[in-house]
Image (cartoon, rainbow, N blue to C red; front, side, top):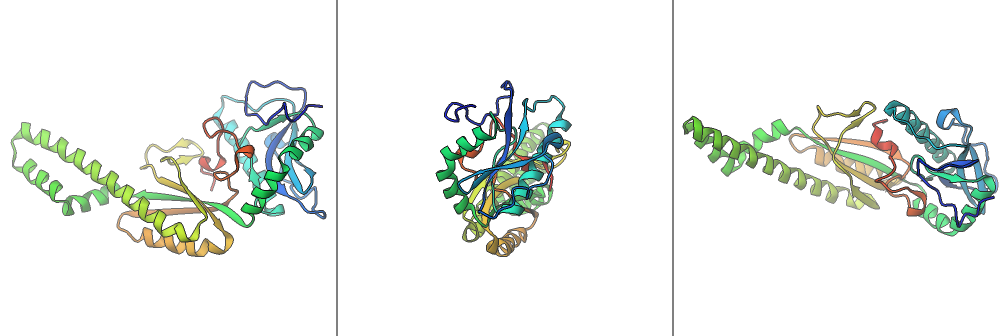
Length: 292
């Protein structure tokens, strides 16, 4: 049996072990909790189980190798399976602390229990803090063509450059056109940032935490280069605040050329405590696969 002080959950695709446990999430479990409440199949159809000790449980499945593939579709299938198990655990036990994809603890159920004993105090605190709170994803999308036209009509410098371009000879017109395009891109960036700050102010009374994420639009076929990348925000909110949060987003969406995408509830991947999450640089978040 492995000592949990020596074996930490790992996302190292080169790890070798005789037996291990793939970790999906931690949950709060009471004395009468059903150990078979999570019936969703795990990665590659694996049977999931609940390993518990002292009121904290880990949803896991037994594995003998890491999950590593050069096939993006295979990786996405694994991500979807991981997400389904965590979602079902949330429905059965309340807000979970999700592990990121490909978190594996070498050892058996006894190893998991020993590790849970080590982290149980912190886990209980975090589970209490997250209780009845879920993650919501907000995408701020701009119709840049429409906004560009409006900015061109309102911005004095842009109007001046456009007028000079139309009156200049071919050589000068080319240079002025480049200046115009650069200034327009600058104004669009500034406008996007202003809208993002307005969004954060609007949602602040209705969320407990918010984090600005990277700008990209992901689908199951990869990043959609044909679409303008969205400005994305993750927010942690109580169940009771969801309607008010949606109303605040409607106010932002009322701005010309603005579209808001609002999805959730999700398990709080973005806000999971460090002991339960891999480095964002090394592991993937199922939310980024555009599954909802």
